[in-house]
Image (cartoon, rainbow over all chains, first blue to last red; front, side):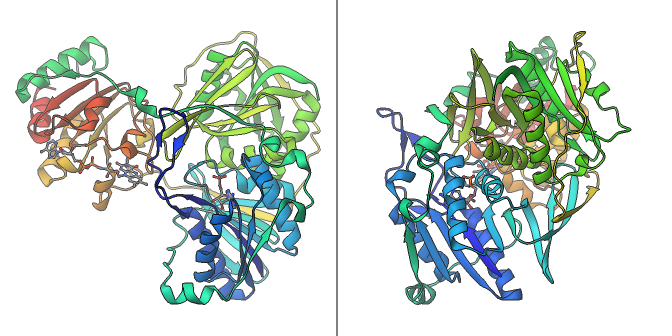
Amino acid sequence: MKIVVCIKQVPETTNVKIDEKTKNIDRRGLGGVINSYDLHALKTALEIKQAVGGEVITLTMGPDDFAVSLRETLALGADSSVLLSDRAFAGADTLATGYVLGKAIKKIADVDLVILGQQSVDADTGQVGPIMAELLQVPQVTYANEVTVKNDHLVIKRNLDNVAQEITAQLPLLLTVTDTINQPEYTNVVEIAKSFAKTITTWHASDLQLDDDRVGQAGSPTIVRSISSPEKTVKVGHKLADNPVDAAKELVTALKKQNILAEDD
Amino acid sequence: MAVINENWVFVETDLQKINPVTYQLLTKMKQISHDPVVAVLIEKSDASLETELAEYGPDKILLIKDDELVDGDDLELTDALNKLIQKQGTPNTFIFPATVVGRSVAPRLQAWLRTGLTADCLDLKFEGDLLIQTKPSYGDNIMCEITIPNNHPQMATARPNVFAAEKQTNSNLKVEEIENLDWEKDSKLVIKSQLLPPKTTDDITQAERIVALGRGDKTDAGITVANNLAKKLHATVGVTRPLTDLDQYTVNEQIGQSGQTVAPDLLVNLGVSGAVQYTAGIANAKVVVSVNTDEHAQIFKYSDYYFVGNALEFSRALEAIL
Ligand SMILES: Cc1cc2nc3c(=O)[nH]c(=O)nc-3n(C[C@H](O)[C@H](O)[C@H](O)COP(=O)(O)OP(=O)(O)OC[C@H]3O[C@@H](n4cnc5c(N)ncnc54)[C@H](O)[C@@H]3O)c2cc1C
Ligand SMILES: Nc1ncnc2c1ncn2[C@@H]1O[C@H](COP(=O)(O)O)[C@@H](O)[C@H]1O
């Protein structure tokens, strides 16, 4: 089975601040790591490969330093990697990202299964997967909790709000996975050393036969108007009496006045 | 394609029941929209969910009665919604709930229509016909205002329990039944659905009153008193993440970024520090009361009333006078 796993490199922590001067997100000193959900996607792919054979290719769109994350996926067991890097891709929203990734899947050719994380922890959208599935015209199963291979099809479990689903899916298919599907492993020095025998191929815009107005900023219908830190929810609270009994009485009186508590509460 | 002056809301049904998030989105859109608000409902041929839906005041219901489409996969639903737009015209906006279903179907439709979609909005407002969408990023640490100025429909998914649902009658309601959508069947997926067993504890996302336990009250006595207090208040018990180590609490009771978003009228925090991952889940609580021994506790910044002192003593005193 030929499996492609899409991975994104994200900042090490999501505890970012806004630079007061530039009004941009201050990412100084923040290293990059593989989006945690994508490690679950990779593990899912490696388990399927172990069960039925095949190859696992990892794919990312981003600047050249995302190669570090691809190298890590090779150390974790992927067979080869593709980096999509071009100045023209900068400023892409989910639609433009899904478009370029989808074109790369077509170029890789004969892909049976595409696996993504349920969402990236920086953008938090979970949209890239369904967008790719639509552009590739393949069915999708999102938020998978469990995947098993049976003969030529997959059996997948997922949950909606109040509903559990069991889905039998033929290939080709696009899958996104939650973080409860498996337990990703960590890599080690030996595997990282060995990974240098595997290849990372870089493709630029010119390698993918792209429609210019569908990539990067030009291909992105959404515009970020402003960003802010959500400090504005902060309230100026009323300090209750120091003695717990008085404090409790004070509170109940105040809450009854506001009809938050009923008279007979 | 011509843009019509309508704002559409996708009605999520889970096994033939309307997901309450739909009512929240309808109420919000009614509040902010100067154009008709249209609910898109897909149901079985013998169902009449439109009666319930009408109680929340939509101006129009686009009704698709189709026994197969009700259980359609994402590919089929996308195709059907696309055909609906071809038939009716492109609405100015199209809003979905940020549930598993909404977050799966909306981006597929977006890709087909080549328009923009903003995920997981916490607020929506209009400037003229332009929808201003407020979306959290970086695990709720950053808020972005996003617009889709040049494409239609302007699409968004909006997070459950952020907007309050309010009933209202609309005497001008039109129900328009759509026939012969001719959506394309997909035989590649076979889906078996079953209702999840009812949650063992009260559903915290629906609770009107919550007593939330943090690590500062994580003792046997603290938990017992908090549960008694909750009973007296007719409140549901919620917890911070450290308490999910205990057998009796799971992610279903956990409040916050990796737990549940809650919207009670009254929230009492006992021994909760107020980490950003926790407060991300309580932004829509109306009145917040917090008890903490640390007078500089972060949680006080999110509280309407606070008591500096021992959670156990305070809960005992409060329980005694209720
Ligand atoms: C990616 C990620 C996601 C997370 N998601 C969540 C989430 O969804 N929900 C969540 O809750 N956490 C989440 N966390 C964890 C979060 O960062 C905090 O660690 C957690 O909320 C702290 O819980 P706490 O307030 O109960 O405990 P603590 O931070 O230990 O606070 C205990 C408080 O109790 C006070 N105290 C001590 N003794 C007493 C007493 N006798 N009476 C009164 N007060 C007392 C202390 O002063 C202190 O303020 C997440 C973390 C990460 C990294
Ligand atoms: N630039 C990218 N390169 C490769 N994969 C990506 C990229 N952005 C997002 N993805 C994949 O899409 C998933 C959902 O991301 P998002 O839609 O940004 O929340 C991630 O878990 C990744 O698997």
